[in-house]
Amino acid sequence: MLTYADPATPLPTLLDRLHTDGYFIIPSLLPAGQVQAIRAALAPWLQNELPGRNDFEGYRSERVYALLAKSPVFAELAAHPLVLDVCEAVLGPNFMLSACLAINTHPGETVQPLHFDDSFYHVPRPRPAYGVSVFWPIDEFTAENGATEIIPGSHRWGDEVPVGAAFEKSFMPGFVAPEEHHPGLEPAVMPAGSLMITMGTLWHRGGANRSAGSRLVITPQYCVAWGRQMESMLLAVPPEIVASYPERVQQLLGYSIHPPFMGHVNGMHPKRTLPMPGAGAAKEPS
Image (cartoon, rainbow, N blue to C red; front, side, top):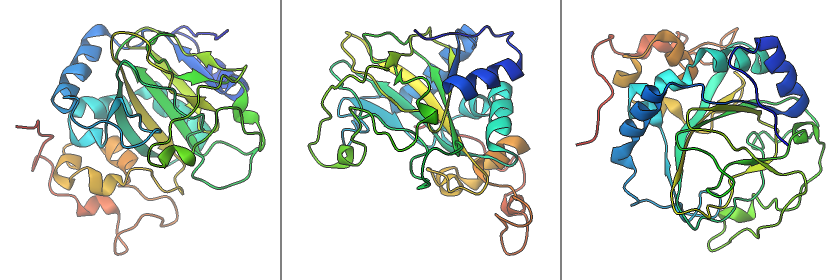
């Protein structure tokens, strides 16, 4: 059975739980108004016109990438103070935003293959996490509507591969992962506006949606300063939009230096390539 933390839980306690269990959940952390603002900002891109291209993305799911190019509300979410504090403790200084996407899972979606999010860093396990994954449910997560399913403690595993893991196959045309149930799987049931943070080494999957409604989540993912980001943020978010964001958000996107000089542009700090602040702002689609 999963355990939940109170919003007033001290950071050291949350970090202890993260290192021990591989995750922690704080229910209903976001105010209802912020949840609604996020839903409204996503609405223009959620027209059920671009379903997933493979079993990993989900044939009955919509994914919206490059969220910080869409609206400032996502920058606020990506730079949530508690999330940044946790990432600093786990990943060290100068960590970056590796990905920031929305996943809208529709009725009839099947289970995702089990996977762990920083698996693209091909370093043998057991090892430290090189990524931290964050889940912000915009719809309530239930066992019926496809709540993310996690295996607590699996972040400490070595080269064990659980039943239901087929990450590489999931990108093959027509492949559908069998719904095999690993005995340690737990659905991360939580209200809308909750926060779940997991180690990048934690095995998990999106659940099957057997309900009559969709299940929407925002999932920012962070990586160590020396690691390549999953989304090429310097290309995904136009410079005029980046210039309108606070410096901390710019750093998360990759406009930063990891000492002594990783990330420079022609020998200079990358933020010097940005246009003057106010030259542009995040635009809504027409």
